[in-house]
Image 1 (cartoon, helix red, strand yellow):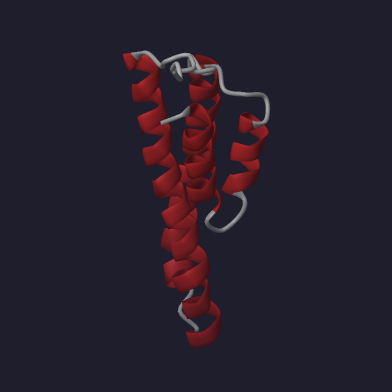
Image 2 (cartoon, one colour):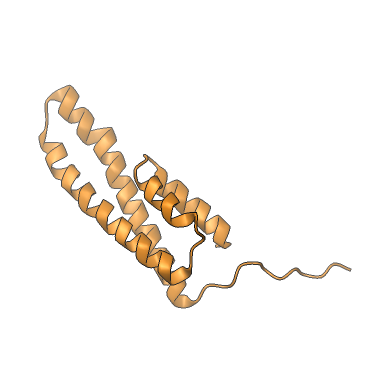
Length: 112
């Protein structure tokens, strides 16, 4: 007869789950703003001569980037992320689709 193996990962508390949800939301906002900047605003600026879009989307992305890094650091301390997670989250914020991939991998490793 097979017995259930205990989970190697401790269960997250409600506060830790809430912190992880905030990180997910911030990651999605930051990732979306980066994709808007790269995929819409910059082509409009350089291909159609419309620099106004970058002047709106650029600062918004900058604010969301800083907020994401702050939320990432706070969440890392609250849920005791693995050592690889904080540098991977920062690196992911510099790559298109990075925050989305980081969120998926982190949740998979945390068992969520």
